Image (cartoon, rainbow, N blue to C red; front, side, top):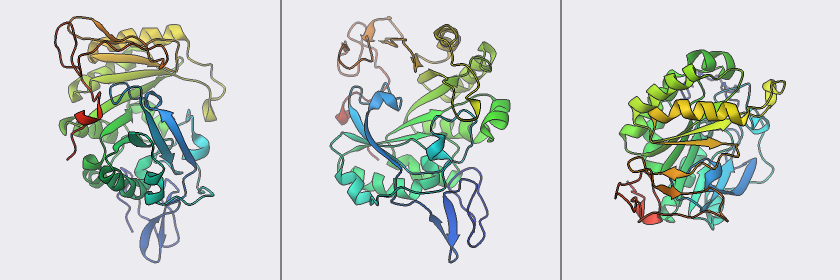
Length: 316
């Protein structure tokens, strides 16, 4: 049986599992091993996804099942993403949505593409309940999964991890399907924010500028650059300094209207691209002040990219 959940399109024989370890062939049918058995469940600030231009300063009910279509050497959640097990507690899609006391639900922590059947059932119920849906993903869609998912998810945060060599050597994956996924979602007018982890000994201005050109050509508006901290097979490396992150942010600024630092002391204010008015001065919920007229800059009237109230969400 051929799985079409991600770019790998694994052929899985009876009793076998796909590359992600999360899909297996049972009695001639493909099944998600951990369907309904999440290993992570929490209520998070939406900024943690990270999403800065989608329902800012709200919280989101987040869920994650095991498995991933990548095997990144720096993975921060490798205990979940590289697991072939399942959680102890059964949580049906109906039960998951029933827990939601937040304006949105998020599919995150590992790689939702490899358990997209669970995500899709949850997303359909979320739509009926009037909840926004969020997917945090490596973006390596298959054509079929992109068609299935696009209309059900309101906001995407996609990791753009590095150049082609970075994907091959460190992520054991490929850049092309990610670039194609980002471009397709932007063309479909979905809310897209992109995240790139900055590894000081690997990421340089040249790589950032190359990724920036790709982001610019795709129409991405929001780009997060996040500091690396030692983990998994890269636990021997030092964490990325604030100074290095700041250099990468400066290299990225020409390529996207909104560039932010993550895992950082960097305040990351939202600034109007046209007149430079500070619109959101802090990401600290307790101290933040929002200076916006709905979704517009109060000084020059420019429409700011994003979804700032629940009524702004365009449902298919």
